[in-house]
Length: 343
Image (cartoon, rainbow, N blue to C red):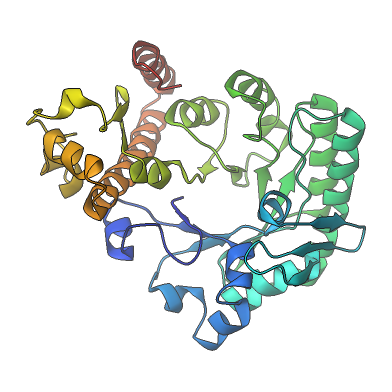
């Protein structure tokens, strides 16, 4: 899912995003509730109409940004109180308020429960405490969400890198019953290998008949390894963030267009692509745009990267359907190992 933090996938129009094959994007509760405010988005017809995106939208709960961006955040059983990183104004985000913002004001299709983030590594006692608070907040989120015909509510499994805590979290969430389940609390400092070790058991603790969503991940090799272990859905700012900083993702790993070796490279990033950004512009031209700090360079590389990630997912879906995911994974790992920094 491309990330549309503040009602926009950075540097791209919704038509460009849709043309890459994206069927769903992610919106950010924290940023939208602060600016332009969720109430204003509601008055203007909801997030779909506001940003002119007609396909599904998943919104995060706001919890991650509260913990990582706000100037001061205080967590209690009732809610998290924080100061805006924009102007220092005070806000209270409870499970019920998060559901109201996402489901009723923004009008998202997939709503996430409010949870508590713990960066890793962290003491197991702290991880366990946050996991159990998140489970209780999940129940409150479910009660606030109620029964809805056209919107879904996802819970978030926590527990750090502990298999025992992850199992307890999953059991608590399954007892409450949700439309889908996210694996949270990863990609927060534990590293690729530790993440994969958690994914060896975490997806299997969640219902196979419901979507399983790994939040905030990640690099292509992370996604391939997670799909191999049973994960269905992903979101990450990496494609557009990389694009804004001169990096293009390819089947042979990342390409840094700032590098002088591309100054006279007349080849496109992907001549076989049906995406203009990948097919119609030479690496030399992209290098020139990046070095000149031209906005078009950020647009083209973000467009290319979003398209590459969509193509990666499409190729994996085909590999699964044809019973050759093992071979796909092995080939991808081999190419990633041969690149400078694909992992």
